[in-house]
Image (cartoon, rainbow, N blue to C red; front, side):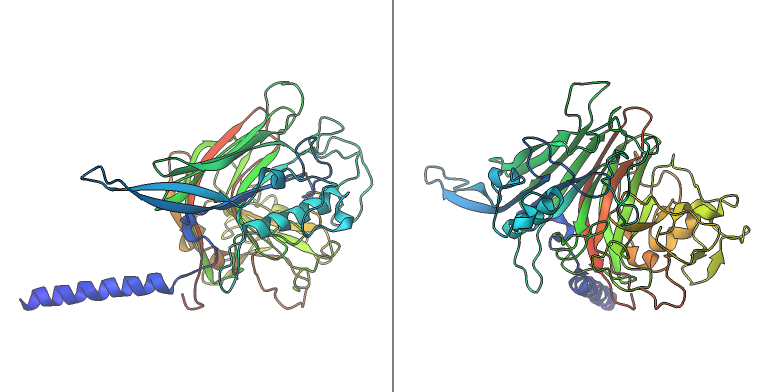
Length: 494
């Protein structure tokens, strides 16, 4: 009897501690684990330098949203002796088709006169407007939506549309970037299947479309995101598909948790999103379930995770000055066909040093100890003034300002953070739920700063999962599902 009492007492304490732990965890997103029946999801498309440039005829500005609240009704059936209560569901949509079709020249609440004929400013303000329609007024911080981001990697170098490290750039000869000629930086055709609910309580909706605006010449590009959930059960499951074509060999698509009010990673406009609290290194983790169905070929840089933020080279926060702001990215690439460009013979593609989980620095010229195969590629900001030789600078055109990339590969050195440790982890046939110590890892990665400047506070405004099919040699298809996405704030002692 005493042993039974002790076992019961022990089990009760374990249960209480688990409940206490669950209650003490704080999510940084408005929809923890994607479990809210009233979904909030939006869509954004960008050209090569994270602008719009020109709208596609008939499509409006490339911003859209699908946001709704669920209503459940109960009906009593007095004719039956059993099952007298019948449920029915309806969705109260907050965004109309006309809102999603808004394009340049069409004013909306909150739009400014200067944006009406500027496609870049119009898209930024339209995102804020859609956010106002979708906003959930949680206390203390409201939030808006998960964001589906689509990007076209074509760059017409003769256009002069993209700045070079934030500076206005002159046109130059083609060949460095993919482009079939004038118009290659176009925005996509977008179709929206507004979310519906079946009589059995299954909710389903989606976005899809193509970048190929003309006739089919060697296959069409294609993108698709479909979301589905059973009322009151589990997580939304987002099913993604991305296909390149001869004309569009470099495409990117991610599902993002962005800042509800800030410069999200890669942008210089105020954004709307899901992050009610901006996570700060080292005190946060990410939980997500990922199932990669098709990888997208050898050029598919599939990210688990991609995190982005912005701070200046002197460590101060970004303020919208594209000449001195720098976008910082860290990306774990899980495609086992992605090689390590960082090597003892290519030190310029490696960060100057690696920091172990125990805060030991290993310099890149320490060939016996530096984990070269843990890094795909490191590149420094193009506006940095004190770079260590040798160095490689990041592409100066694909963001509105200079950028810095730390691209990682699965390696045993990342085991302490819960990241993939060997090639094939998390890839096709290895679906799993990950709990990643993103905050802990991001606190130890090398990012450039001017000598003598105080360390930047590493606050992250975007966290996402998805792929960048990087200039494919043939038509490629990537397909994956994502669910249970959550960003969990941890205490400094965790």
